Length: 281
Image (cartoon, rainbow, N blue to C red; front, top):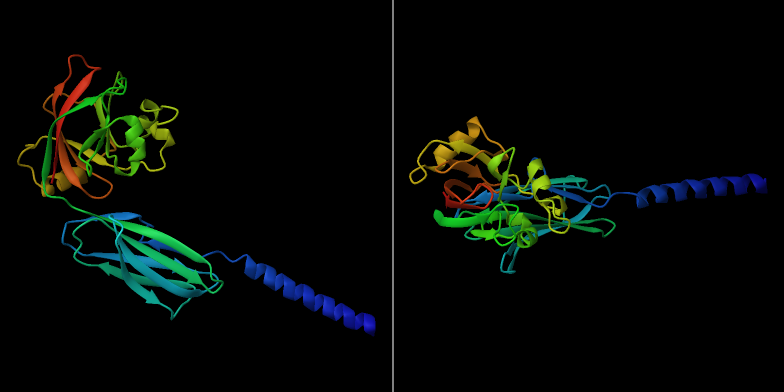
């Protein structure tokens, strides 16, 4: 009888430990933004932005809190929620209003086991239409002139600096026997072969922006955002090649910024320098 009683205790203990063991294996909360787990968006200055936040918490949510963080470091409280109709899956749309400068939405999820997950969503603001004229770029074989361009910074960057600012790099310019004079997005596979430096090459970057391009035949000075949208809806690519003097290329960055690139001088020989103007709209 005693043996039978001990067997019951052992079995019960095993069941309890098994249950505890399973609960310990529950995943930490997972936070996602938008429909496709986006990480950033673009709005015009002064606009508002609705951001869909989804939190999956196997161990059930204890609290969701968020705040807005400006690029200068200032933090603005947003909201805190401690009651949930479905503590294992929470969805809410957070509206960021009157955005006048880049802002980061920071969301924190705390589950019943007091485990915290944090995620960030960047909202970039549009800038006033701007033209960067007579930009001088070096093709990939040169070390003295940059081949990378950042729309948000309005700068041409050498490859080491481009790697540091990889989240802001939108164009890579290069020349090759197969593609000729080319403008391409960091996400384009060809770029990883052209800019393949062991330390700074694009293949080492964690962030490779997916800028879209289309060669167009409308006027660089007067084209509108609707012209660019129409052109990109018909044909868009992560690379435009075989460019010549006078060619105009429409683009849209990963954050939604639109603009035009005009080629006005391909340097003394086809493998030296490139002069362009970039107009954002």
